[in-house]
Length: 208
Image 1 (cartoon, rainbow, N blue to C red):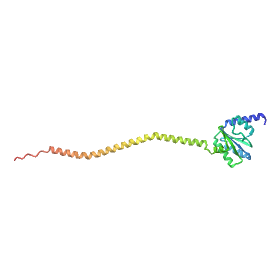
Image 2 (tube, rainbow, N blue to C red):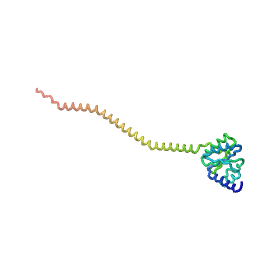
Image 3 (cartoon, rainbow, N blue to C red):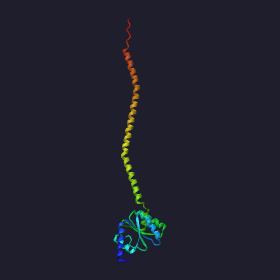
């Protein structure tokens, strides 16, 4: 490769590193062109899978400030430059490697932090960003619902207490009225009897 071409390639790889939030280093020895095409399509939503030259990639990584791939850029190398969800990209690579053992995940880098091959696989076992956001939204909704209940509950309880108090007072008023009615009847009778006794003429005095 002519020198200008090498410089352009290094610049391109450097830019890819800088534009990516993660990168996964793989060895693709034994994979066919058709298999590589399938792999590219499977992770296309989150990453670009590119075959690279080790020497130029080593230079580009250093220029991008990445030291995670030192000593591992050997053999037929391809890198998944992740610009989407790192978890989904890792899942795609892991799942492809399960059915195509010729693909070897050698390591990676995530937000500047070096990842071993095992850590890349652990990354693939995490829940996707969409799932985490959905869970977070659910948790926030539950919290808001709980908070709303805490605000509304005292008002509801107060309303129920007031209703219960009104009912209790109504029952007491009814009981008082019922108790007063029989008590008034004898009182009227006594009063009537007393009036009759007072108004009745006294018996005439007998002469004797």
